[in-house]
Amino acid sequence: MKKAIYPGSFDPITNGHLDIIKRAAGMFDELYVGILINSAKNPLFSMEERVSMIEEVLAEYPNIKVVSFDGLLVDYCKAQNISVIIRGLRAVTDFDYELQIAQTNRVMDPNIDTIFLATSLEYSYLSSSIVKEISAYGGDISKTVPKTIEKRVHQKRSSQILQRPTASETP
Image (cartoon, rainbow, N blue to C red):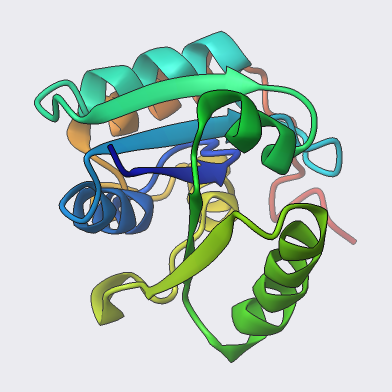
């Protein structure tokens, strides 16, 4: 059985992520969507919330398994007998960073390959950070995430007290 993993923070999962996931799921017997803790990011959703949301969105795909883990990706891959890492690319700037990570992973374990999938053009601008920024200011995110995720983002935002100066309060 050929297994692959698509790792990310998915905070929240976007239509761009889903584009890559659905295409990768068609290429492998089993696709893990691996939710990682990224210490450089301030998450909107807890790990448990992200797992739950992604499982809900991907429920119709029997060969997709949503998992969370901490630690090195290559160690997780070894433990689960996963030989392929999937990474999405939006632009050339993504490639520079992703290539460096792929080469590092390959040095740590030469049995694990990385496959880069170019994001569909309609999602090339999209990131979780952009979705969070738009939603923080009450913008429309309906074209960036599935309906269920949009609802969860709005619920999360409405439960937070967002303090920002109004135009009349700024100097």
